[in-house]
Length: 388
Image (cartoon, rainbow, N blue to C red; front, top):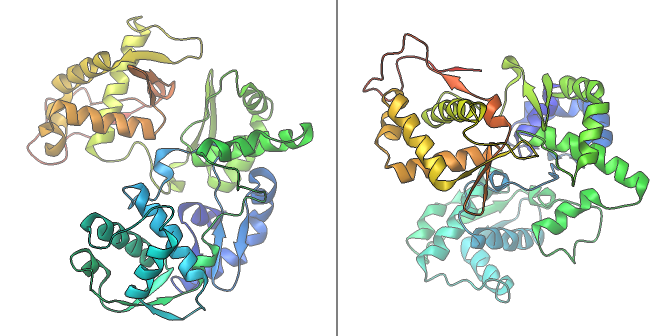
């Protein structure tokens, strides 16, 4: 079901942007529609303009946001733009000045905007560029980027109409939701039978969308389901994505086959993932040696200083083999980048004055070949990293 992977890897598939892919995915609907409805419980939007899989996660993670956006204002402006576009007909053209006037009025009580301020104009430019990239609007005359330097810059756009499919339909009243946790609670609510269905969907969604599924006392039922239904999980996920379900003491991972990889992957051929693999191998050795004790949930807690010391030792031993940019980073900046990367891949989580290392730290490790004698002055290392 490679067509299903296309929908997972994209926000949507539009007919205008890729007609061939649109009809390929549409023709294959019978092969994955049941899996989407029963195992995942996601909405599948199909019309003459777009096919969209509404990928609602059981738990929000930082990387799930819009990567181009930098602050809350960007999201407020996007919501305002969606309201503006909803009043236009498909194919109707509009001027940038009309949009900015409407945004001022729509956001006055929520997030006031002032187009004389450079940060506000740049935020709108980011939103416009994103809307162009995913096909919500087309540029007929002018350049969106010009608004960042000149608030009088005029641009002519066209509304494609697909913005009506942008928002997610939760199938319930969300007016009382105020936080991300309020939306996450949907996957735990309902009567006994409903909670059983929610558990199934929660497990499938987590294994498909996130690097790992960990369990604790709060979600012990998820562990029981994975343990008892591992053969069915492996079958359905394997048919949909191509890979293998791997279950450990306190975590489950669905690992894609080499030929079926898509989207962001870890590890990949880059300096930061290489450094993370080497650091994880060093941390695993220290944990096995008893330097850092394991908690009851199989996590290991390190203070910020302890983690930085481990990174410093790793850099001292292997740093010559890293790319030039990573080699030359100040230690504090290097630590920030590695911690952010590891948090995104569910290798660790910041807790109080330190970090909780998850079981995946001991699973995804790497080392240089025995013949490795040092690095080079090139951006990439001479010797490839071997990961386990």
